[in-house]
Length: 193
Image 1 (cartoon, one colour):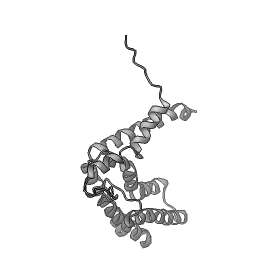
Image 2: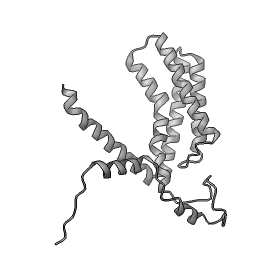
Image 3: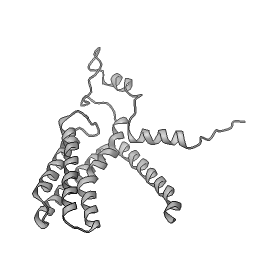
Image 4: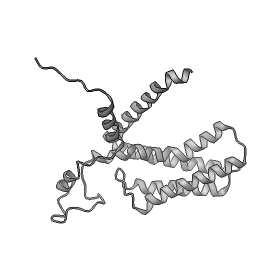
């Protein structure tokens, strides 16, 4: 019964936290890239420690390390994500393969729930969640020639015009929260006398 009273408040605080993190990521994309790179390297070190000190299957460890290498390749174009690039497709495929191997292993060998949750959180979910939250970071980044989308056919060197012509399309996490805020919360009307 106590959960019913605190459930919506907890969900609202999680949404507010995600909104705040998305805004920080949009403001500090270079720092965010460094943090994600450090998280990838820490996750690779965790996999190395699991290989040395635990008796996890080598297939889980190898797929986990390959997954982190594909995450490093996706990070090369950060904050821009090309959904059709080979590193991105490989990263998604290895996340699915890692989940399958982990579910298969942990369903056959007993580990305490806290250890299984720690493995999933640190080794499988941390870096992909960081990438998911940072999807909205490329909406407020200045245009560069490094963008992988094709430019206008009329003038291929006019990056700024091409950027502002695509500016109306916003698909990131921050734009989703802004839309939810505008559609769910009541708007205050300022009265001018």
